[in-house]
Length: 388
Image (cartoon, rainbow, N blue to C red):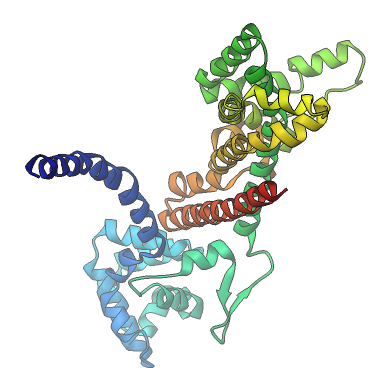
């Protein structure tokens, strides 16, 4: 009993380290992204006085509270608050910074604010302030999905506001195109590697691993050289007189899908090849001995057993495609950029961590839902195969 108890304690202690690493390396950043998507503490903590009187009908009280909050902020805090409010309404940055610098000289009334800058008379600026005084906000989700409250509080999708939903759909379509193309190309190669001679199998495996070990940036740059207007492919077609002018093979959907397929092809081939190697050759021999032809043997005996590798390889490629950034950025056009491009743009250029977090949460949620849907389809498909 003492040895069994000690073994359990030792096993639990051995689990502590990987669990702690998992919590710090995966769950903590994930929870941080989720919290950033709804966090509005930067603004709510800056406008404490204004948040207490924002609903008051006395406009002078609101003006005095705003000036009091701006006076209590240091220049860095004012600049940060102005940047975030400017994301909601253009022109807010200069208005808030200029008002904050002169806050102590402005008469603490609405008339004083308007005399300093007539823009304070516009209700739009006060509406933006009112929406951003709460500790938590859904404004980033509203902007990302396009569903915004109207005058009655009901969510409506205005025309043109669904841009990020369309970008998300574009990302899913490109991922499906790449996943389907990698399966079409990868399945015959995996089949040849699993059932062919040792020399053929070694050659295919070497080619796959060499591609796998090469940097994504190098492989993407190679496709830029191949597909550009004066690249090798266009020059070859021109020399063969198959075309009269260079084809547009890059900076469009074609270039994006082709280059991503090449980069992700090993992730489809290796799982399928591993599953195919576990299928006994004796089953095919038994099927042939019972009168089935090679095509029927493949379709009814071999292919159903290889579907596990197809699902794993296709699913892996699909999920990896959703987060691609470098390859579409180098080979795609403006209409072929995926959601990761806009996440990086919000982080690096506009410093809008809220929108970057919301798009990341939407992408993660979509992946989880698709995985659940895929697992259900796989289970249903597997049952039908067994019943058949």
